[in-house]
Length: 144
Image (cartoon, rainbow, N blue to C red; front, side):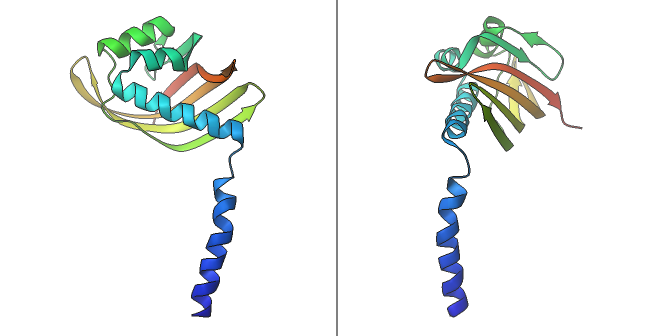
């Protein structure tokens, strides 16, 4: 019984430490990343417009590079369509007005009506623009 009580006390003490592992800016970037993930699944043009920088460089795993307008056009038209998207193994590192996000992306796609499965490593650069974090660059590579 004493061991159980000690374990519960230890968990209660460690929980706040675990939840505060990310700094305020890192939490803000993580929140924007989640908003971006949902906007990609929903093909939400206005949200994607707001979450991305005017200078966006969006790199696909097949070496295609798009600017913001090309990226938005593909997402809104369904040429690029994520049905599901899970981002795991996330790391967020913030230095000043720049954040580096790395993650593993797995998801089901329906690009141009053709079903597929994406398994990627993704690098994203987020930049603070005014009060908001905006996606400035993204590059994906296929998992081997």
